[in-house]
Image (cartoon, rainbow, N blue to C red; front, top):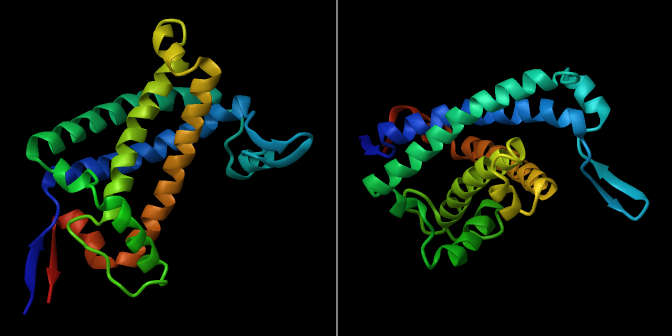
Length: 216
């Protein structure tokens, strides 16, 4: 006999699936913009260890020479990304959903149990509510990163008009580096999230579409 467990409200599912393509477009268009001034690299004295996105990367993906296109898509999508993020936070606050997302005092200790269990090092199943401790920490961090991306994005988009914000973030160059680091963080989250979804299986993925999960 199967039992239906309700997992995700309609609002949460809408925010999630709207944000998915928006974040993808933001990263894609950001690459088109970064192509025009790709200066970031990891270097020790004169030894180059790693350069972010060399010319061959753009040529292979056909992303070269599209600065204007990238800026148009980035700034247009930015408004939708911002509105969706604000509405999501307001919904979690009004509905009380934030209590399931924000880390508790035990989350940082329990998060290690989640990591060890996922890596197969520990056989002890960690405590699991709607979200486990690691998910609470990561999802809260992603919300903070989202607002950080919005603020740093505005700081480098309008460094003169809103110079007070640019100055708070350390100046134009610092804000651009912060924006870049946050983008790398989103890419890593995107990768890990997909791996975790695949690992969790079809029923877990289906619940983000239907809102419920059938269990025996």
